[in-house]
Amino acid sequence: MPELSPALKDYRNQIVNSLTPSLIRVFNNRCSQIPGIIKLTLGEPDLNTPEHIKAAAIADIQADDSHYAPQPGTPELRKAIADYLKRSLNVDYNPDNEIIVTVGATGALNAVLKGILNPGDKVLVPTPTWSMYFQLIKMNGAIPVQINTAEDGFVLTPEHLQEVLNNEGKGAKAILLTDPSNPTGRAYPAEILKGLAKVIEENDMFAISDEIYGELIYGDTVHHSLSQYIPGNTILVSGVSKAYAMTGWRLGYVAAPSEVMEIIRKVNNFLITAVTGNVQAAAIEALNNGQNDPIEARKIYQERLNLMKTGLEKLGFQMAAPQGAFYIFAKIPDKFGQDDEKFANELSEKGKVGATPGSYFGKGGQGYVRMSYASSTEQLKEALKRIEQFIKSI
Ligand code: PMP
Image (cartoon, rainbow, N blue to C red; front, side):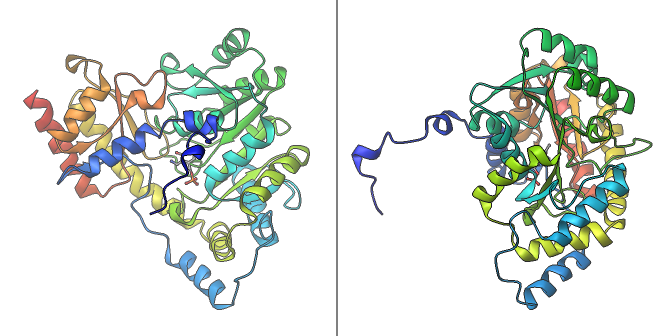
């Protein structure tokens, strides 16, 4: 085992060195050590990638696609993404210079943030949110400014955004909006999104719109996008990870006006050279021929959502109606106090159910726990039973 030369011990990147690991991951890892636990902690479909998508990747490997793929993504995949965006949102992006393929939505976010941010820039982040945003913004030298949306029912209002821009968010370069939201499952209605679009445009900001859960919406919820209202300000980030059960394939994309895409594309080239060819072939199949896959997934998740929501409400948990993604953000009943970390720790150790403390998702999450319903119905039923027993015992 080589030992680092003592003189090199302090030679670490200071920004990266200051970042703490994701608390969600740390909590999940701790839960993994508890025998017999049911973990509702991670944002990962339990479904497997559909057969026709796997077959497309296998065929691509058999056809000796073992060379560097084109840097921004294959023309076929960029066209499939443009067609998909046209079909689903009725927005127009030119596959030649307004779309790039990245390593997951995470890779997309990194390329975007690196491309547009200078040291000290502010990025507004409505919270509670996927906490990785905070780390990614900081890693790129900028400052996340949290906007607590708890009092807005977890849907940021235009008035609230303007108020933040008049105060601590003055001069912000961008806002990073997730719709539908992880962890709350809330989706933005068109009217609110239009109002936000107006404020964003008036304040000359970028809207980084993370729509990775855009196809996982339930009931009569409709997914809208800032790209429909302010395409000139919007940088749309998405991918195939969630809707096609392809988290492990690592395939995401960015769609944006060519003038800003130029720099995002440059960063992505430096970061990754190109995404693996057979993964791109799988994504082409998903987007061109997999229209039914998210529909099937939605049916399954919708049933589980109903099961969990009804079950939790019976036990005294309250929640702002979840409309998308696969999370329930539940308010811990008052009688158990508002220390979500303590509650989640005890629930995991004594109740053998892993639910992530709400405060890990930023301001507004205190007193909540996030439960993912991307687990089998049997597991969810068992989890509800255990939560009931746990609650009775305290
Ligand atoms: N954005 C949000 C809001 C997420 O919840 C996640 C996954 N937890 C991602 C992006 C990451 O997506 P990918 O796996 O494609 O990198």
